[in-house]
Image (cartoon, rainbow, N blue to C red; front, side):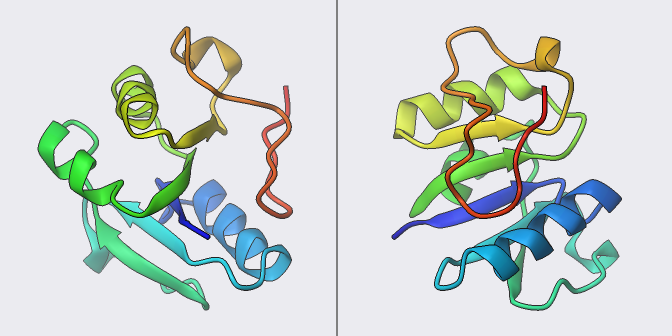
Length: 119
C-alpha cells in the first residue's frame, strides 16, 4: 500500500485533509509536503517532507513509493499532474476543477479515506 502525499499539507486545507486521511485511512502513510517544513505545524500521524513542485527532479523523487497525491496548494497543478501520470499515481485537487490539468486522472471519487474533492 503506497503513501499519500499531500502537497500544501502545511496550510489550513492541507492540514485538515491530512488529519482526515490519518483518521479515516488507518495503515496508510500520509506525507505532508511543502517548500518549508520548518513552517509546518505537526499533523499527528504524518511525516513532513520538503517538496518544491516547481523542481521537476525534486518532485519526481518525492513521488517514489507514493500511490496518490492530493493537491492542497495553489501550485503548478499541470506539472504535478504530469509527474503523477508518468509514475502511475492518482491525483486529486482541492482547487477549483478548472485548475486541473486536462488528461490527469483526477477524480471526485477519492478512494483514500475521508478527504474528498468536492466539485
